[in-house]
Length: 350
Length: 87
Image 1 (cartoon, one colour):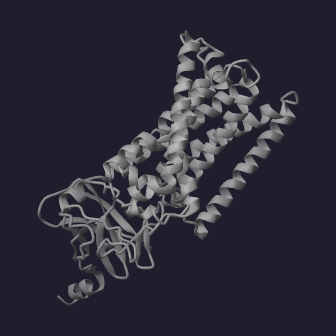
Image 2 (cartoon, chains in turn green, blue; image 1 turned 120 degrees about the vertical axis):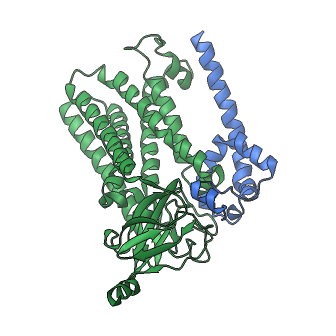
Image 3 (cartoon, rainbow over the protein chains, first blue to last red; image 1 turned 90 degrees about the vertical axis):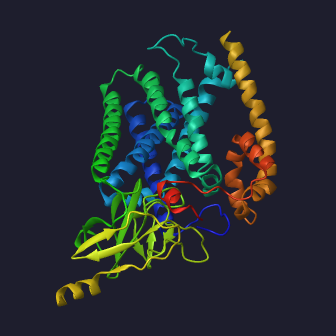
């Protein structure tokens, strides 16, 4: 939603988000290093930092993975979704700091090139319990690098959204590699059940949220198709300046109620396929909850000078019910909104 | 054997990265504008931010530049397909 690319499209919300996140990371690092130094006085400063950065990155990864399903389960979490990519880049920076310090600590002092040493210092690749954990971290970091490096809108536009999405879905591969990295690297050396418990709890929370939100979304996706108007909900089912999401013609449609009117547009944002129906009407425009891209509800077009457009749908309101024609109109096609007040007045007079 | 395989892998990675870094200098200064008109007026900060991925994805970007693509493709979905696409 810009005429030329900038480094970061800052706004007040993003600044607050980033400040809060950085403060949270610093607080975590301070607490982790302070508590570990107290409980384990023999730990060196390098070890404390390696573990501090590593655990901070892993914690942030769990938060990142939980935000999506949390926002689907409860709109209260949508603000966390808004600037998630900055959280991803922060997580990569923390993981990189962990990796660089670990390479210096464990591989820089030998006669082998550090990266070769990383892969060969433990050559027990045929073992399960003694499998080398550091290469797992290397490949996870490589995935996180690709994700962080391609997080700018330029890459989304030029790699195309499906390719970009597939690349960023690799976060789940990185997650499994990191779990293997931690399980093999740390838990084998630690006798305390605390770390195993925390890791298991993290996995249970992440996967529990994913499964729950997927199950609820599937239940909501009652497919509507065909020629005639489809009854999607009652007018009062849609909160003011918000939407009801229904599945029509193979994709979700966001039906918005605003200023006594109802309009329907395709739910898929042109930017990153964000869920427009989970956003709200701000300054007369449907605003994507992910990155703030805006579309006018009556024609699905971004306000000038922006050029993004999404498909629109014909809408009627009859006897307090909202009816949507499931045939999508070309992106940017203006459709007269269904007026609730007039309709109600007609019903009262008849 | 393991050391030889890893040495080859690391050497290949080094060569890939070296070519990528050289390519990225060209791409962030001129190439990105040829691929995407919106990047022609991109800020310095934008060019710095796209540098790492330009180096990492250099074969793909070089191919795109060779094909002479001028505008980013528009994604398809069920509604766009049914409605006839558009901007």
